[in-house]
Image: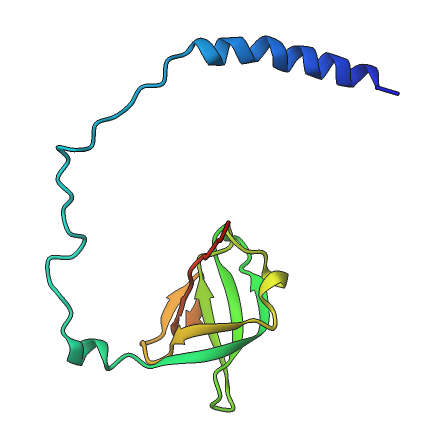
Length: 131
């Protein structure tokens, strides 16, 4: 049995669909756009090789109060001391999804204060989706 609200919603969407279909799709020609490099200076191999990349295990992850983007990670990096890193990935992940995951971090960066909390490293992340 259908609810009366379902019929109202269906009629509203069918009325809105023709208006959207009539609007022509405007294509943008990007063939003449020149893409400028993000950084002019290249990083040499010696500088890159100084980065300490480590596999780290997420022990705890919480949202940083008063921040829409930041998550605070407590990580096990194998040194026996917990490491705190803040990352602006809250719009992509909920904190509870990340507990127990293994991530890659650069651990030899100088501490940086964000929202009054020292972040001792940087997390690397990527999204991989297959169809």
